[in-house]
Length: 290
Image (cartoon, rainbow, N blue to C red; front, side):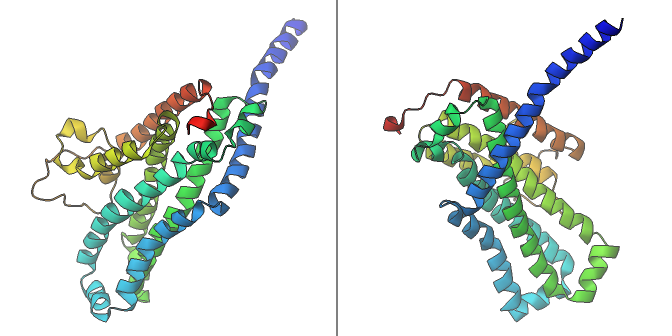
């Protein structure tokens, strides 16, 4: 009886051992790639994109006294305006193109730099490589674009005044709204990141697919309800803490409930990463052709 128990324990340990190894390998890739994402030669554009919304709100609230006074006096309207700017500028432009730049370069950049073969020569499962690189892109984009959202909100609240801002953040809905905006930003990085990671793996020239995807996201409000759900922005729009009016020509669709939108996004990301793992197992490096 004891020998059977020992055999079962040994078998369970053998099953757990690969997972431990894969976690360590993914963590090592994550540490290496995060440094490259933040300090690599391609990081400049990422910083400029993240700083763009903050610079706009800084200029609007610090140099335009009339705009700052309007924000303070018409706080409800200011929140609606911020929600529209957040969806149009931060999500559809900064997070979209920032994620495209970060995640498409995770593999395509390595091919251009002729360095991807070093990973392929290591005793490493390629699916683990995908997971480690994706997490590194998610950390970089989530941190930078999350700070961009936080900085924009900071200057918006600064224009309202210290006391009124504290009352709204602590005693009013402001605290929950700020957390929602930050969460939506991270969800945008999560969804767009997985999508662009796959584009970088499947297409030799990813610019055209990225522009097609950008156009699809921008015309989402014109699409019928069924097609709306084939986009990332639809689910992000459903999570907005302040409703955003899509215009007189928009085809109205019921927002996806939060309890469906968030898990649905995670399941979609998981499926896309599975496709990325399938692709990379069959990927052959031909530096001369790229």
